[in-house]
Image 1 (cartoon, rainbow, N blue to C red):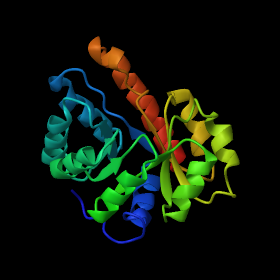
Image 2 (cartoon, one colour):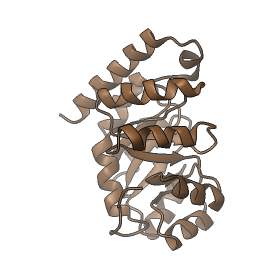
Image 3 (tube, helix red, strand yellow):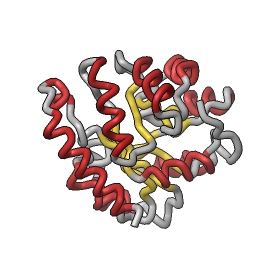
Length: 222
């Protein structure tokens, strides 16, 4: 786990800086363990330095081991942390940041009490207001597409002055809509490489889509 100490609200200032620099965060969703190494390397060569894997993935430990062994500068996000046990396990495995798909004050309390970098999720303006009062400067908005998409998220600013990591149903073609918004720090998506492509071992299409994501990443950074 990398040093992220300092800042407010579970290291929020440093987390915001990292998420904002990342811009596009792929969610790793391999279906076979031997695919992991190739996929992580593909993202790394394309310039991605922040990757997420869901805590319920059976390949979580292999993912961490590969990244730590071969790509120590990559930041690892543990997605779908639904309980204190998930947060504790993610921290034990060496994940850098824990993220939940819900707004749960108990998870916020647990993560902050144990000094574990944590990003909560919101799905409406009321929740967003609550996390702002708790000192969070970056939050996950999920599921973004189902809850109004880029137009809704963009409309939250400047009344709600917090930066958003948008995720949930965001396909490659929709990424630019989010990244052009002042209040969106990054997009997190599993739609770059789908489980179907992994199941089919369709590496030609996988590489093509990662290349498209690489172009979007470069464009978002000017």
